[in-house]
Length: 193
Length: 347
Image 1 (cartoon, rainbow over the protein chains, first blue to last red):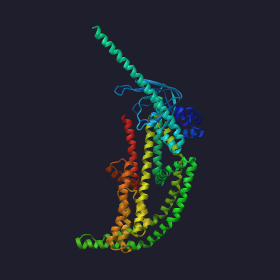
Image 2: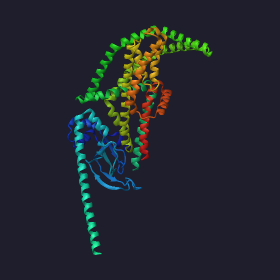
Image 3: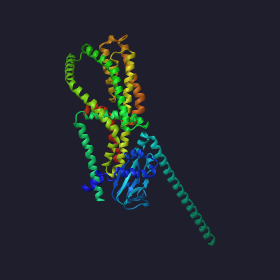
Image 4: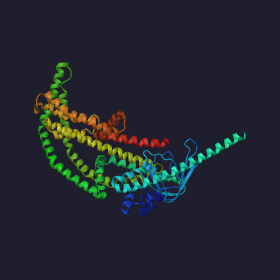
């Protein structure tokens, strides 16, 4: 208990310098200078999660994004009508995120924002949270830093949109092919009968 | 998983202990509550200005120092320009107070006599009771002056001191609070703190602007009609305007007392004077009620009018005038907190 308290609340498990270097390497903040990263590291939130602990659940109101410092996180989707499924015992597995990955960035741009999937820690993990109030504070106090972050964020969201569009197109083509095949089989059956 | 739950509960316990300790200190240390309320007012008024200076490329600390220095200059200038005027008016008021007091008592006895002859009601005791009450109040307030001075000095020192650290370390306090927040409530608390910050900030800035505008309109209006003690009465109207609903009425009462007691101090007949004075206070109140409250204040505080009246009464019972002033923002914050956690619990 005491050790847990020490590890999670009192001790700076990830020292400020570790967080500084982690942020500097992150795609979202890679354009920022030394002082800008220092300023940012005063605003972000370092969180520790146990294995199996949910970070957020599908349908929760979302306030911002998380960057995975260490550990791994599963993103799972649930059928809203499906009963009895929760983040621990079911749902459709979407992806597994590892050290350096980030997720939930759509919440920085959306208002209001709701989580489209559940994020659960697979192992003991440390995450850095960067939220909308923090982004607004950066924009208000240091607009040039805010612009750099927003441009990167726009790039990430654009990339995600392109990936989604590609996926939808792919699925649409697949569906059309399946339709044609089904029609072909149907007419073949009709012809033979 | 059991470890996680235990840790989460421990964090929740720590968070609740911090909140409980904060409220305990607030209510049991003399002047801390008022100083903190005033420090919040200073913080929310200065924070956008400090951020604006920071945007010009200066550090946070330097920006705060610059704004504080500028404010000291403004306060000194205000002391230099406004205080002599206030002191003159206070001296004049002190000089005229016995006359005003006896004039007021005469007015009351005239009304009383009129009531007696016309309706044959009332005993001529009211005037004596009122005189005794006024004398006792004057004695009581005179004895309280040393305490008021010491309280004011404490507030004068404590308020800018607290506001300075709020301006400099607001994000540090916020992060410290979030550090002890359990993971399952983390995002809810972040959103809640942001909403609270936005709501309180907008409310304080709106009320401050409202008080300034009401004070300015009253001052100019009283100067135009040549009413005495214009600056003092305008300051009083601006301050009492912070009390919802009855504030504007309380703010106008001293001017009408002065008018009824000393009708000869102004132009024309008494009726014309009453009309002019009513017009001045009405214009200030209409500007406030028609433009400022609907556009600014009502949008910020989402409370039913009945709730507003009830919380004002409750605020007055618990903390007097201060309670009346802070009751609405406190109630709207409580509503925000409960609705956030209620939504979370429903999910």
